Figure 1 (spheres, rainbow, N blue to C red):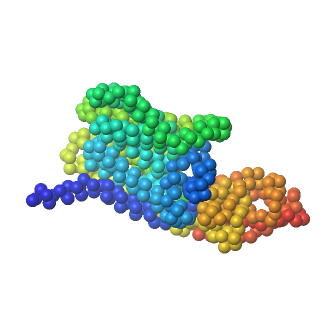
Figure 2: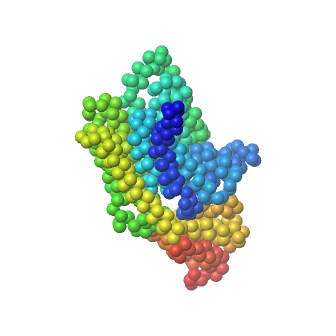
Length: 542
């Protein structure tokens, strides 16, 4: 009877780390979910989902989207279809679906740690470190594919692969490669994830082959099943590439200058990696440079990244140690996978994007958890003291991260977001809706998917790539032109230059420009303006 009564307590103890991590994650993710303002890349997935629904409803299958962009697969758009049908343009609910995926990622990290490390303490440490990390939380809230969907699929891939190794059931083998294909269907740049998996597979080739032979299976049949899984998972993107080979090739060729520029700036790439790992780059982008988190006043912001560096330095020691063969094999696998992941992503444009870099966060917390618990167990003190050290480490890290996130939410409520993330975009959308404006031009990138989404796809936006040539680009007047006027510290010079070209071009061509409305951030800082342009006699000013 006593044994039966203790089972719920054992179950609760086994899953208590995950439960606490889920509570922390949701408490830091759900507040202010409609802030900052909707980013254009977020709205892009919803736009493609709307196009998919419209194509099905009208029966025009040729308009059904197979991609989002030349390297951006359609998976996020397809996942957004239920939201598009039910909620239309609620930003908080749109982001909620990705917050839920972040919760699933925590569960999968915990399961993978239990399977691979066979240790609830390591699993609990990994998810607790991840649950409060600012880059993970904000990457999930932003709905960025690399930050949310790729870690989800990679974890499913690894869990399926380990499950096949234990059971030799072909469904797990197939699902592992199917998830790799889905990674490609999410982002073509996920090739660095697949390269890391391939390197790990080569390292484990002999035990994999031996397991196939022991089961009396044909290596050729497994290879065919693997190729089928990758093909089926990446089917939409593969079909698009096959149907548009010339257009696709030209678009990819246009990416080469970006790759060369990325290779020529290794210092900038390292800077972005560090800022994502220490949890400060996403807040900087949302809130503006030097107006985020008070990081200069709070040194513990470096707590996790320093722990990660220390863990990486100890991995070779554990990999070479003969004291515990199982731990040595795990350390070698982590070291190989992480090294290949970092090296391949570093030489692509992925090292430019915070959301691309943040896909490594689940792996990084697993490395810290493994190294911390392995080192604590090998220390020459009692087991109770090792547990105290681990608990103290987790508490310090969680306190530092929670402080950053609470300060982020406080600042976010005050400003509403900055630049491309400004909540002033919502005000602009409401103004357009109230005044029944069904088309505008934009001087800058950042509005051509956001405004249609926020207006329920009633207002369209055309980007003026050459503002000085507005008279040649527009046939019918009057028109309205939206412009970012302040508030985006990342592109302030570019935006000011575009605005000056716009004003000079309209003056030279006898177009009168009238300011119709200004839109400010919550803290009063000017963010957006909309102008009415009419073809009349030249004027001397605006």
